[in-house]
Length: 401
Image 1 (cartoon, rainbow, N blue to C red):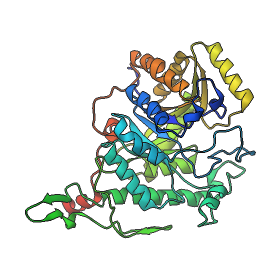
Image 2: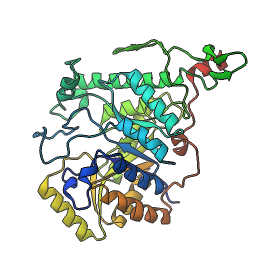
Image 3: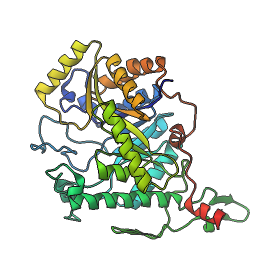
Image 4: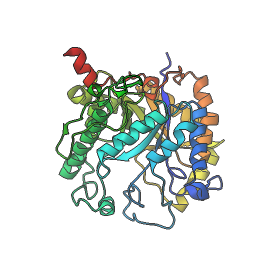
């Protein structure tokens, strides 16, 4: 039996390679135009991809870890707010999940929650978030409200070796919990709209969050009525133990970066072990493997293109890079599917070129091979991933009281 997977796409500017904006197929003058993002996400939507993540950062430098990071002239600098881009795209798309990147350290949890609830309403149940923990000194300087936080990854590369990173993940967990409890604060039938009695709202079905954590507290209810999914889909990118535990405890989907299929199987075991220790949800955590891809008609063309990009600017990436034809990428996906992942998130090296290759060449190949989950018409992103609609915790308390 062929193992089936979902395909997602990760969108970032002109593509994930830093020199992609110089390619003849690129659209560098349009990166901050609505039409550019509309064209990208509509193409992914029409091809049946399950969701699109939209990258974001709170500094001009982005999330780079390069030693020569800064406002360089040879890199794309400047971006649109991912949550606002997703909200713009919501009425322009039909089926694809819209998952903007949200940093948890500086924005207020209440604002993140209401923005995601609004996106869920605007998309009729296709909202999600990619949660990013921590901040850089540059991000902290932009906001000017706090000086504490990670100064970079520790020399060991292990998050657990830096108390500042451990605190950042604890804070991110609180933000996710706040997003969830605010989403729950309105029960499904809180709005009555009874014209004759003059009662628009059943006040007994709107609950204060009353969240008290290590880093912040929230007393009131959300201003946004309960949205189609109940709660938005929560996703996280994880590379090692503490991030795996964070995802296992707080997320619905985790993006991993395995070196190969064997490594993917090992990571799945580690994630499952973490989930057994900390996860309270009955639904298992969905695991998506990330691949950075460059696709051409021939292997020789693909490697020539990659070499040209690398001559202009060398990439630093956490994901496995696959260079070749659509068949090359399909083989990698089949191997990862056999390893047990639930989905693949593809990072196009060049936009729109590699997204076009994904939608027009790769997806048909995978469909013909029986590798892809078919869209069964489920109305929300959560349901499309096989996840149930979230019931308000306050309604559950009433039922079991």
